[in-house]
Length: 293
Ligand code: PRT
Ligand code: ZN
Image (cartoon, rainbow, N blue to C red; front, side):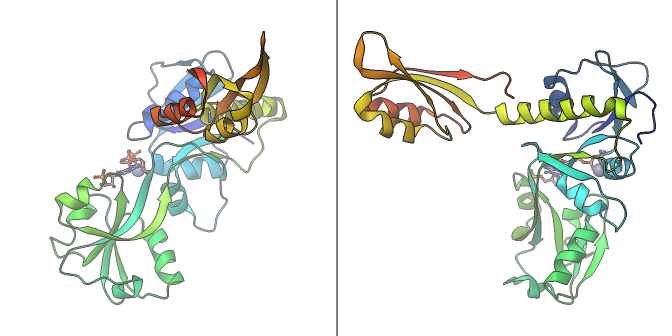
């Protein structure tokens, strides 16, 4: 059972790379968040829900232990928190906070495959993930755990290689390191507690999850409307990216053409529009989608 009677709790990062997007997701799901005097806890004024704002490293435990019902955290942090105890359940990937945990080495170190790390010292903030990865590959290496600034470890001779998060690659480049292997692909995920909420809050919890799923799937999705010659209908629908089965409607006064409406799950680029036009489509409209369920 959740610890606070009559209220659901969602754990989000207080400040950092996931903080803004986490709050956006909560707001887009229709929760009106009010910042009170308490920096740790934001209240939702239209539902019995509180946001617990904490360091991301605390989120997996808070959710696994039932202190919070839901949480938003990077897969890297969730994976590192796995220690044989209760685990939070991953509900869905959220499409932001993407990064990759990589093995990176200085140019002086010859790296062919993970076995090249045998007997070396590797610096990382993710010792558990790295240990599992090395064990699975039967590589024996020493791990030096560092809280931050992992990229300077080779220069300071603290380690021969590093295992760190990479997004643009600028940090590795600035430190003269090259990425060699991928240990984990990560993005932010929505997680839920294995402990059920109070029965009276179950319906609210389910509906928040469903709304968040709607927000995530509508992100980047577009509503496309166009007119198509009947003869080119098959070709035109094949061009629409991730459209599933579109709606096809008659056009008044025209037997040779139809109107096509489709929800495209993937990005609709100018190139796509040009291909549609070349295939005979006309009056092409691309509209954003605000909500989807
Ligand atoms: O204070 P708190 O503990 O909550 O935050 P934090 O400092 O531990 O984490 P924060 O806010 O930096 O990151 C939160 C989450 O964002 C991470 O756990 C990842 O899931 C995700 N994320 C996405 C990243 C990056 N991209 C990222 N690039 N986390 C860290 N980095 C760092 C990386 O460690 C390296 O130092 O950015 C540097 C590399 O970036 P590039 O762009 O130069 O490759
Ligand atoms: Zn952290």
